[in-house]
Every structure is written in structure tokens, then in C-alpha cells.
Image (tube, rainbow, N blue to C red; front, side, top):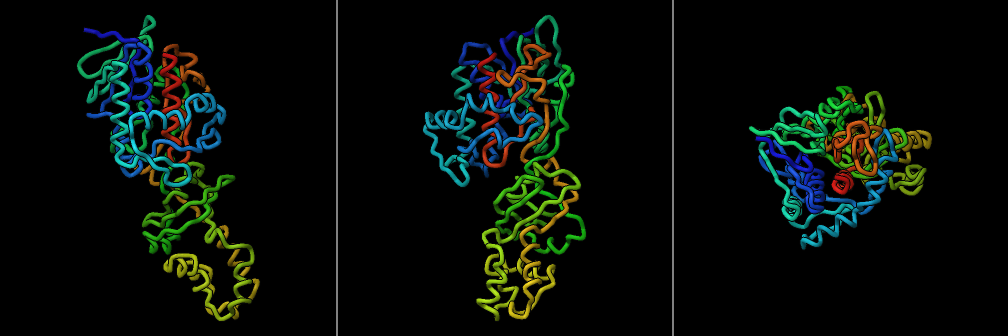
Length: 391
């Protein structure tokens, strides 16, 4: 027997849940399907289990896309304040951590429970643990095989995300589906991901576990946050941010001691000539890192024994210390996926495919990728709302 609905939403993650709830509360009969045994699995693990559910500084310029203007419409119509109002209506306590990042005081499970309650209000039929099989389109209807049955609807929403964190069942399913219906896909790649360093940077592997604040730069992008040295390379918020802009062959530079003014080493030499160069660095850096940098710079001894030229060169190197990553830790460690279903194929107002009527794509499946810190959740909410109001 075939069941009929007004809309079928594939993927019960952040975007799929809110989209289904929005459409359901507008009187649409909605089927929400996910292959995982329970909904919102990535929400539950996000933000260390507390879900960084949005960012109050959300703006279109904090997203990467082949079309930087695409996200403007959805983001302007469903803002961080709108989602926060929903959170507060459920009495979910929250706090701002840093840089506008909002987290639950309690558990990320509260966000999942809220979204499930919103779905219940819209009488959404949720089917978890059912793998999606064949998907076809004929006579104005999408027919989806799921589990042991088939369902049809004039509208279908692709909210299955990207291939980041495959251990949670993530895959490129959304792209296969998009191509099946003639939509172009921008080459997906890992984003918000640790970068790996080649063997000749082995000295820094000895610093595994050491963290310090830097300004990370790649091309025109720059982020000031913590960087973490790992046994494979570089991680930490500053590196995850810059990784979204990095491409193989690019150099990433780290500005160590970013608060030091130009000429600080030469000034310190005049003020404290007997201070050792290593101690001068160690005043603002972890001891093991200061030692490693001294070794790389080849400078030892008291500041008074070093020439201004040598100190100036050291300053310049510390301000733009180059790293040439040989790769990243891939989709297994990537928080999100850059690239995805080409925005040129979609309406920025409704998220509907221009050449496949009734087909919608939202969230991470689309070529819109936010910065670290709640931006990707806000895109999920905004794109979900846009589609849900159009269904």
C-alpha cells in the first residue's frame, strides 16, 4: 500500500526537523524520514553536548558559497533572534559563550526535544530507522521507497546533510539525489577541519596538546582564536575556521603573540637587555612552544647581545609564521561540508529547485557553509523555515 502526503522530508536533523514542523503547523500532511534510529543525532553531539544553536552575529558575510548573496534572503527572514525566541518559549536556559555563540545551559537534547514537540504540534509523521531506497518522480509526484513501504507527495525536501562525520551515518546521498534530478553539485570538501602537516614539520608534533591564541590567515581570511598543536598537525578554533578557506597548496600563517606592537622585541631589548630571548617569548607563550620557536629562529642568549636586525627578523617571522599543510583530517573529523547542491539551481526565497518543481534542498546539503560557532545551525533553521513556508 502506498501512503500519500503533501510533503516528504528526507533527513531528521536540524534543518529537516524545523522544516517538517513549519510545514506541518501550516496544515500540511508531512512525512519525515531518517535512516538513523533516532532524530537529531548531530544536534546531540554538537557543542560538546550543549549545542551551539545559533550566533547573534549571524550575517551573510560569515558564510562561504559559490554565490555569496544566496543566503541573504533566508537569513534575513528567519534570524538568530527568531530561533532564540523559540528556544525561550520552551524555557530552555542558555548562555553566550564567546563571540556571540549561544549554548544550552543544560543539554543539546533539549533542542531535539523542542523540535520534536514542534513536529508533534504540526502532526508530522516521523519514521526513524528507515533507509531511503529508490526515489522517483512521475505525474507530478515524488515516490520514495523507505523501509518496507513507499510514500508519495507532490513535494520532497532533501535535508540529509553532507558527508561530514560519516561514523554517524553521514553520506553524499543528497548529492546523488540532486544529480538524479539534474541539479549541479559544487565539489564537496571537508570544512571546519583540523589540518595536517608534513614530516618536515615534525618538531611541532612534539608540542601535541599545546594551545595558544593566534591570528590564523589564509588568503584574505583571518581569524583570531586559539590554535592547538596535535600529533598530526594543527587544530583549535582558529585553524578550524581558516580550514574552510584553505585549499591544497595554500600556506596558512600564524601570528603568534598578536597583542605585541611592532618593534616590541627591540623595545624590550632597551628596557631589559639582560632578559633572555627565550624568556621574552615565554612571557606570552606556553613554555614548550616558546622553546620550539627559539630553536626554529636560531636565536639564544640575552636580548642585549642580539642585533636589532635579528630581533626585527624574528618579529616578522613570529607575526606571519608559515605552515604549508599537506592535507586535512578529512570528512571523518570535519564539523561540516563545504560545497554541495549548487545554489544556482535553487530559489533563494523558497529553496525549491528551479528545474525540478516540488524538489527542495536545505541545510548542509546546499553550497552554503558558515563559520564555526553556531552559524551552520542558523543556516539550517533559516533555510528550513524558508522551505517550510513554501511547501
